[in-house]
Length: 394
Image 1 (tube, rainbow, N blue to C red):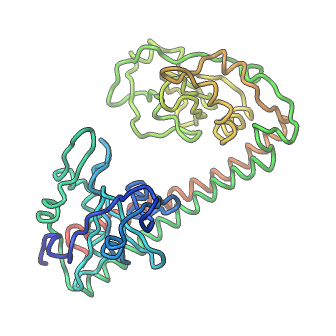
Image 2 (image 1 turned 60 degrees about the vertical axis):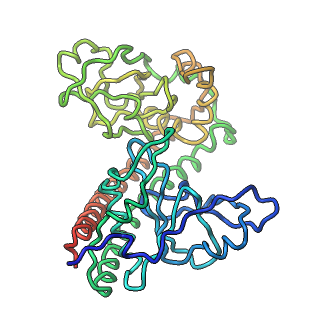
Image 3 (image 1 turned 30 degrees about the vertical axis):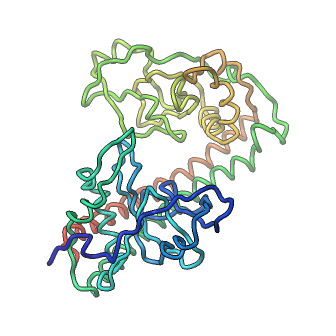
């Protein structure tokens, strides 16, 4: 297997254009970093139009198979250097000055080269080609193109490898679409049964939220000492989408746990972020986190089916819209117990809430099956990508 630098596999690297506000020159749609997804695909739902001289439009318009690479952007957790495959056959697009377009040579299959460059970003080899100026991460593109080595099998083998990766990617994307449909189904069932919280078009009685739950208390005000294992300690970053995410989970020892016994969590508790960027986010504690401990949040003890119903309600768009005004204030967003207790919420009959809980549990079972399938298809894709990256998939 021969290895060539990226610069040897492309006809040219084309710098992007930003132009000016659309006033005089011809306008054209310009793809920005914000149109990149982290899966190497374009999201063209919101594309800006800019005034750019016609001569530059003629010389720099994207062609099917071009690979757009991010030169500036990124974040501490995401290296600069993301790539997307330009798959548009209709319309005309340019690309911003924070990006460049790579146009593969005739003996290089564009999908194959895209996947290998995508792998370089996924496996963070681009880290060694980035620097930071004025708070922005920049890719040293020239050095990246000259020094990054790509395994180059014969053209037909490249096409075969790309086809294998396309199929594996299709499997994981289908699983994601199914998962999204289940999430949409849950939202649809809720709206059909209970309507919109803001408008309350079904005329449900309104009650103070404090009349529904058994008790409310704050989590810890001083952080405990974290451990590498032990009992989970749930922080604001773990409260997401109505559930608990393991990403960034920390743990505390039995000794630390004994100091904050009042913050021990039970299955069905609601935990609401009371301060910070995601103030107002709410999650229900699942069985998995029974006897975990709550962080710097509001912990609500509430019975079923109210726990499931109000957790879902507070995570709907209308539920978030009701909470949002309570968190707005000068400085750090903040929620307190008085605001939560006095919050007016709809109170449909308990029987209907119980029926919704049962329907949601059935949907969650199907989501769980799909999540397992997604995990397998994701592992398959990553395994094949790793093999292609190492030149072992030929």
